[in-house]
Image 1: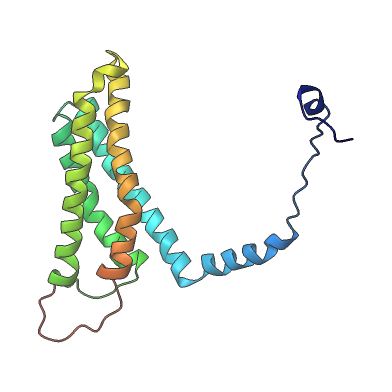
Image 2: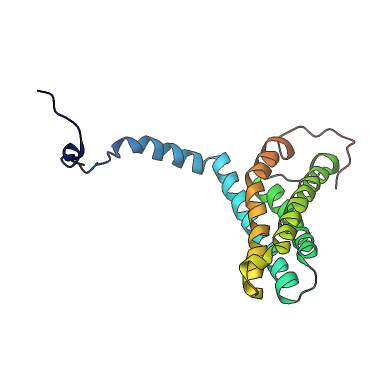
Length: 185
């Protein structure tokens, strides 16, 4: 006699507690520790910390110029804040995260970095401006509108964070031989 499946049979189903066996995780933990302590992990940590410092600088400038002193609208504050964070970001990334020493190469480092920063500026400015034009959806409170517009500004940089790391790691600050007679900054 074959059992019939139906509502009555489903009431007899039993769910057991699933116990995870983490003993095999030690290999992955050791690999992560090795990566974390290695040159790539250390560079990623320094990049993250440098990005955090540049983020704080940009945030202070954005909130002060847009939300506190009303110096500019969302667009102008975004431009001002991004420029304020770009210069220290360049030096922290070049000198600290990628451990580059000596003079900066204008055509291989400075110009590409600031082109990347300009693209970030365009994207963050568009994001802040777009949010500013739709800020009424959060109500009439200036505080909530500031949080909404600033959130769009922050989100734009979060989106670009990984792409900027890859660009700097694989293209901009690669270990290459610098020939003589090239323009340096």
